[in-house]
Length: 96
Image 1 (tube, rainbow, N blue to C red):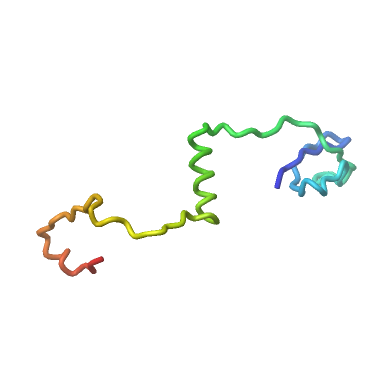
Image 2: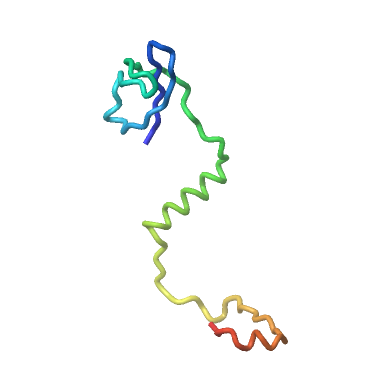
């Protein structure tokens, strides 16, 4: 939800959060209780670049629109190389 700035006649300033459809033009000041009117302020714009937005959009899209797989990956594809360890403690770890 967006935040809105308010200023009362006494000079107090504060921010309040309202749904866009329910933003009042006047509200009670949280500090002194006087009538506070909504102040016009600059919008809070993001400083993220386009690659950051693509990453955020892709993460959000994959949450509710995952890619559909129609077949198993081919066996001729790139093989995963398993690293060989000689530490005896690693033998106790579960295998995948």
